[in-house]
Image (cartoon, rainbow, N blue to C red; front, top):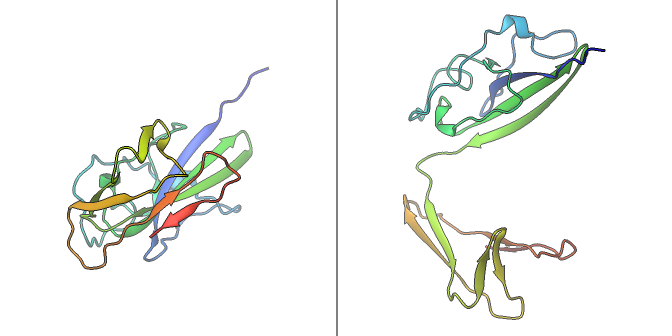
Length: 173
């Protein structure tokens, strides 16, 4: 008995501000792999703020030139900022196929860089999973914008969660 390996076919397109359509689809709604030459993921560079080029990398929506089961893309490889990109993988084995998608929003840059810390080291202490705080003690954070702080509408938001999954999340704005 010969076991067939899984095949991975990756696609990328822009879905916002305007959704790009795949031009060639098969009868089941999957992009027709044979009609899309594989696009190489370019090296990271400074993307344009407004680019007239379609797709993730300026070549329109299409197939990526990789068959790996894992993909890694530096966001600086995308054509432009302020867009939402859809990365889709079609996994096939024999006649069976399934697809999964993830949307990746690349925001405007330069984005503000912030530092968040406890006001006192005695109020919280670092751990591998995050920062532990004593729930019976006062908790005070210090938020500070350290770079690219232009704009009047900067705000901070923290989410605090308990190590006990039954305890609800606390969001501080």
